[in-house]
Length: 100
Image 1 (tube, rainbow, N blue to C red):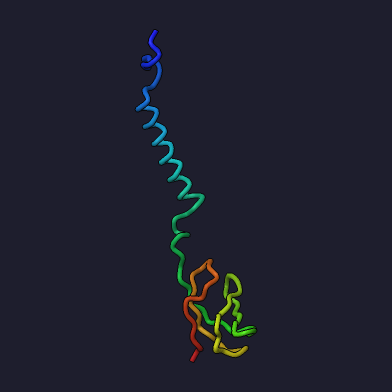
Image 2 (cartoon, helix red, strand yellow):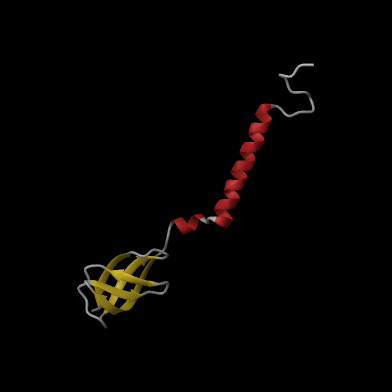
């Protein structure tokens, strides 16, 4: 009896590697579609008109649709209406300007 070779009823090493590779690729595809959607990696840019709610030590707080955000080195006053741009799901404001 030879222990180094596969018998006809046992799959070869190449077939096992191929099967494992197919399973791994399939699992990656399923996870990327249902668990970690690829579209979440590319976030939508949102433009919103908001009011300055508070200002403390040069940081203004505005309330956007998903959560409050801060504007560092804020030149605005409480109650000013500002147009802000941000990426959905992040905390940073990309740009801001006083509404004309």
